[in-house]
Length: 103
Image: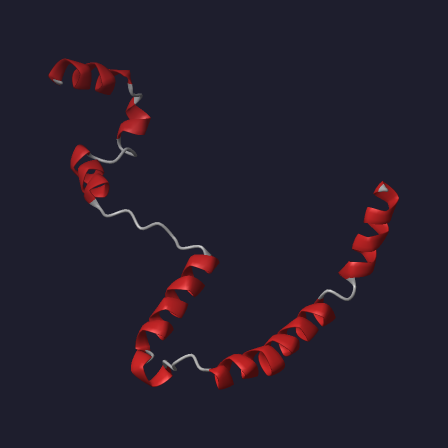
């Protein structure tokens, strides 16, 4: 590499030579660990995993029984469906308009 290094340094104008980093500085920079910034979704996912990991699974775990299943279908799911319908209330009429134009 001595010849290539010599030819390269001869090709660099004198006024730029002082502004360039040394080989040692470049080597130190290349040895640094690259830290890739996380996307907001990745950060939220990591935080959610951390929170879930802190939950004591035995205390949360419940056996499936008829009472739980009935509660799920009578109370929880209808509330979820209602909330989804509320959130989509503006979108559904527009969707129906666009699909009726296709027919």
